[in-house]
Amino acid sequence: MQRGSYRIVSYKVRHNHDVREFLSSYRHLLQRAIDTIWDGIEWKKKKNRLIPMIPKSKEKRALRNQLLKDWNYASHYVDSAVKTAYSILNSWRRNYIKGKRSKNKPVVKRRFVRVKETLYRFRGEKIVVTIRPRQFYLEFDLSKAWFRKRVEGCDLGELILKENELIITFRKPVSSANTKKRIAWDLNLLSMDGFCDKGWIRVDLKPLYTLHVTYENIRRKIQRSSKTRPKTAKRLMQKYSQRYRNRVKDFLHKLTARLAKELKDYEHGFEDLEKQGMFAKRKTHNRAVSKQNWKQIIALMSYKANIRLLDPRNSTKTCPTCGGRMKRRKGQVLECKRCGLRINRQLNASINLYLRMWVFPPSMKVWEEVILPILRRSGVTPNGGETNDLLPMNPEGAEVDVPQGGHTSIKDYVR
Ligand SMILES: [Zn+2]
Image (cartoon, rainbow, N blue to C red):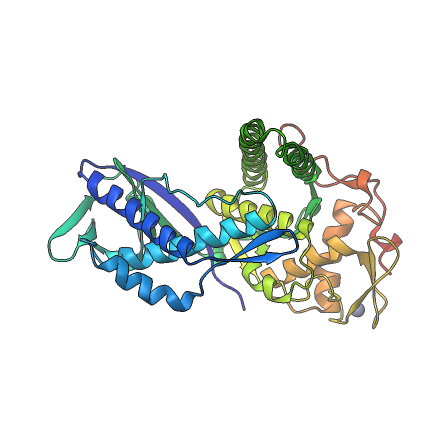
């Protein structure tokens, strides 16, 4: 199963509608939803801690009816507030259990509303947003918008209404038929492994991993001091988490900008993480961290390049030449139980994903006619996976390029 290739583009339009009252009403609504759910939380004692049990979503209906009583705008906003309130509290709970948040009720500060597809129409060249049915609509005229031509034939996505601007997202379908160049990425904790006509492209994610580890250590240290100096601890925590978030964001922005630039005209294939969730067995901290990174990388790439989501099933375990099951050998090397092919684990995954991008099933013919010539031409590093084989893809400096780790013939490690 493959989805079409697309990219997401977003544009801002300034507006002069007076929506202050609506936005602040929505903020109150959301806060009231949070307050009500919060009051229904049961605190269960577990060892020395109190664990919050958030009321089941069965009670959503009652909450909705209660909130609707004095809500003067379209009822869909209530649904959206209830949903948002639950997701805010569930995320607070996860962080609270990890010790990253205190036992204080979350407070909504933002003044914006996400407008779902049920609440707007796109007619002619106007977006009409319903605020109060049959009474209060907002019109946004796009006929003179500079980006009009660019989004012709695109699906309109979510809108974000702010005080002076409307952010419009479009899902832009991209025809793959014209894409001759494709790169498939296997995402790992310490590296991104791409395979394309240039060969095996490794991108070092260690700087990103180091950021996570460093922050985790700082966080623990601050937490230890929070009993004796709670105020200082709180201030420090805020300062460091802000700094950490900015650094991660900065790294990811530079990385994706670089990839989009160096691999211009390429369609980028990534494993569909939503599907991957179903097959993931281990839930370790590292896994959570890398999943978060991948999500951000995919999201950012979708703004900068054409992307396609790929079925992740068995991408690491399948033999690209015979479809057999791979067995783990020493280090990063895999061996096929059926045909005996030996290959680096990450390279194998990215090749399998590359084949999926072109809708080729595993076969010896494709391996010999498509994959092997690429590997030979690019002189792939043998037994990859050693730290010093990693391409120094530091987004500040080095180029994305084919690794030149000694022009060892592919035969040396593929049998
Ligand atoms: Zn095989």
